[in-house]
Image (tube, rainbow, N blue to C red; front, side, top):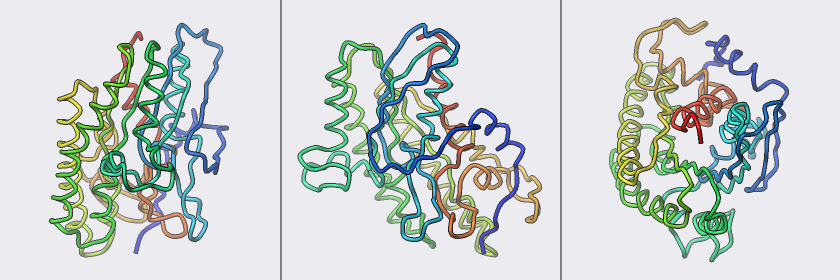
Length: 307
């Protein structure tokens, strides 16, 4: 049985201080434009194109049966806009992600998804935006690959054949996507590829079978991140080390209220995602507000001190 986790509250509250007052939106549109202004005079402005799946839209569970997920305005892209504004950089955000997107569906020209009507695809839309802004300064974040492996880990026992096939697809298709995006972009566009935390570490709390299941998901996610890091670095794309901030590979034992002593990476997965919550909000593998803030930090960490 999943536990409703109330652990690491202090960490979540600290992140939440800067998120206070922001509202959750259930809009269904896949594209939004947003700018953030602060008392700090903007030293420059740039466009920000956020490419990906549901996490790129800040998805979180709603608790509504049969519709347990909606985009929010507290995702990592929104957080990054806020962070950069504090540094005097005004980012104009364009979120074109599609829930459920995989590396395969990004490249498909024959199978429509629920966000775009063929011949338009998310990749084609991204190329159009980049070509139109060819002379501008910009940032592109790429958040793809998780859904390819997700189908293997959502239900246990996971199939090693499924995992191997997912990794092969990412290894083959992600470099193609990156090349297509970079070829459409101008010389002043920065690219950042996201690696992934492992929300499925929450399986650790599933009784006797839990630790072995969590170990398997971690091994699989580490393999995915290695494949993705190679694909990004081979194309000269900066890598946002999200798993490092989520303590994904840290197995030091820590106490958890109402649970006992568990690995730190499991505690972090429960603190920063919805995976350890009971229905109707969990188990859900999306980050919560605190988790999205950490992802924004991972992106910010690889951006230059001065644009």
